[in-house]
Length: 203
Length: 154
Image 1 (cartoon, rainbow over the protein chains, first blue to last red):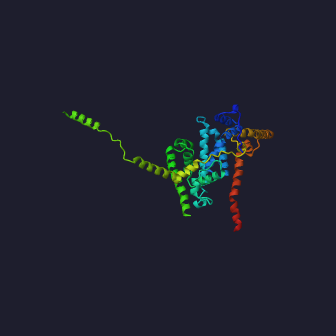
Image 2: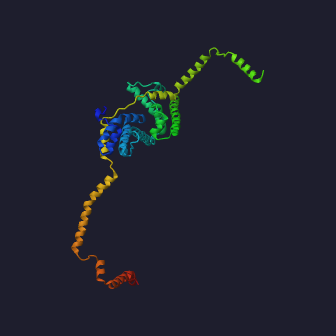
Image 3: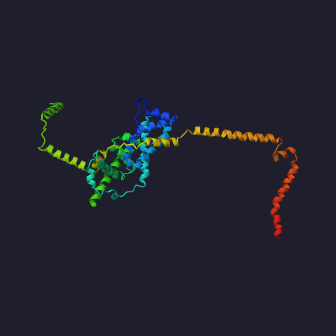
């Protein structure tokens, strides 16, 4: 059930106005920012984390961090840019923390009910939850095999269709670093998929 | 015929040769076969198939019920404040006990009237020599205390 409330039109304030109010001491206005951004942040977090509790944890961290750092927000750039950058960096930090305990063998990620080849060719039907779950399982199995930086870049570039410049702005990494990571990400992803397929052939 | 006239004559002849635009038979088919092979090879590549699948995953923007309330509860609990505000509040709180201590000490000093400490009384009586002697005797006693004990051991 969605908890997003629809605010009346005359109540709509810009993000920057809300930020000024919150920084001025009216903490309750922060709820308006949460309502505005939470669907997008949940959507983004679900691309990096499969487990729903991990998703909630990271979104919660993003909003609490945002509240704590609101004072450092300079009104020279749009709030959205600053907020999205903070969100991406928080996701990256969370990925790094989790990657320490991630070591999963390829054999543990093989599917029992269906071959990898079949799943790879089945584009999910948005109305069929089962096919969506299967596709999601496959995507995450490959993604956990990729390094954190590469994963961030791959998701943004290949799945969200963002440009190198946009990725650089969102992550705070240099353009040349993003380019190198994009190349590596593609290579790592190819190697991961081929590893699964080869493993399946050998089974 | 000079050199430049010869050049012009040559260019005229060269331009007069018609361009042969004829392509070998079945050339386009040969190219298309190659293009199709390239395309099919690309689409059957594992990473391309994976990306096609991943791109088709719908974005799930579902928000858990009253999630924003949960965040707001946390935010209100740890409401971060300006450190100067906290500092000034602590200072104001310290005003009352400090005033109390100040009044108490002032009252005590007024009640005694005469100087109360030993050092002050000694100075006011102006008998420094006597005190010096007493002090040195005490000093000697303390210093030789260990030797006194040694006599008993012999």
